[in-house]
Length: 257
Image (cartoon, rainbow, N blue to C red; front, side, top):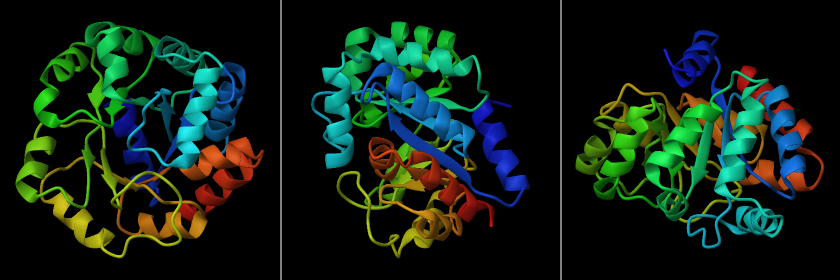
């Protein structure tokens, strides 16, 4: 059983949802982002998504865009993000996912990226802008290094395409609850239950829902339907404002209640 499977299974056995947290590697510096990642893992984040900063992040809202710009200005790269994953792996057994845009992995080389990520102890990649039809080469490299390509499913994904994407998927399913870019919302999507039921007809993988979750009550509302909750922009903003630990604890407590 992989680290991802063990994590989701362990939380499910305890009657709890898995907390997937996103933080931008290198924001505002390499050292500061490492401390934020450690604080998140120490206080309740189960699965860490390490964002690889990119100059043209088409799926990210203003909070994560700004974090990426700060990281790039500090000299953060894909190579240093992998180095950060390796440093965290020395002390933590939690799954670590490298979250980024395809250009970064393609330029570095899919095989090189996967070999280095596996050596660092990462568990998979989440590639925001890679169409399934163009993913064969990357998926082959990931398979050779026992890494997962985390699938993304949107509210607009038709059933036929959903089945295609999820047929040989691994890790967990990231369900994007809303149309548009990342960022905190005032309420959880009211059609979440319907879409999660659709997903479960196509896969036995755990389903984590995100895009917009910003606090404990929202996380608990999502956990009523999904196996996991993804929190990104809210954690990035809290980290920049010096309140990451209380927010993670709040969300963790809501999921454990």
